[in-house]
Length: 236
Image 1 (spheres, rainbow, N blue to C red):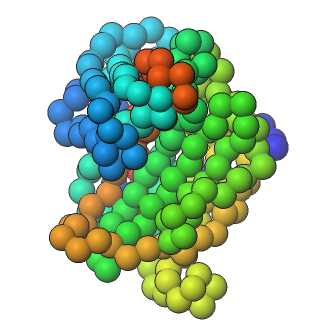
Image 2 (tube, rainbow, N blue to C red):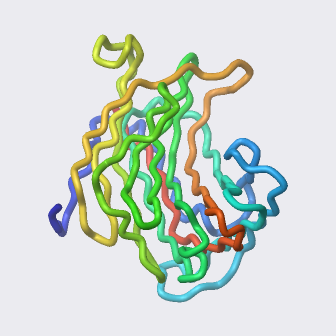
Image 3 (spheres, helix red, strand yellow):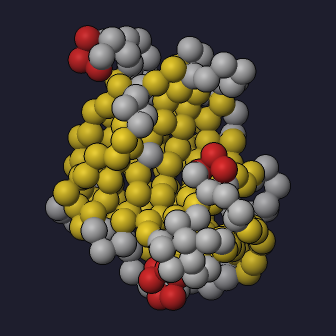
């Protein structure tokens, strides 16, 4: 791990850049799903609230209640992109009680370009490690980095990119690259490479950012506040 003051973002085609900042200024455009996240009989809510200690002075409060091991996905589509380099940036505040009740907190982003579903998923498993998502194999990959989310505000950043064409390196599919993870200004080169998967029938081209709350066996409510949610498609 290393601390750095400046991170150079890979940009090769500025005209393709699509920067979506402060996605938390409104609940408009956000969607919630529990069944697609493996949950059932789940109650979820998302509300706009004023908050302190963040740049824009507001945020979205996420709530999950249900039986043990319930999950809730909150996602914000922003439209299709042909860019291949991405930055996902979010601040999250979870109280101690919610971290105790959570199995994991997930931070994901995606870019769907038919016929491929590019998905960069990650989860911070409480008391364990960070994991990256292999969408082709539908499995988590242990990144061997301790889960470092603590009560109070945490700054999560992901840099990633993709191949736009197939390659022999990834089972004949384009590759997903999860390059660098930033947690509270500590940056770690991850370099996880996985094959992408096929876009399900009926799904259209799109991209966007996601946060998912995963409950543990306790069944206790999980709450989190997210703010300064940014998702940038940075070019080819």
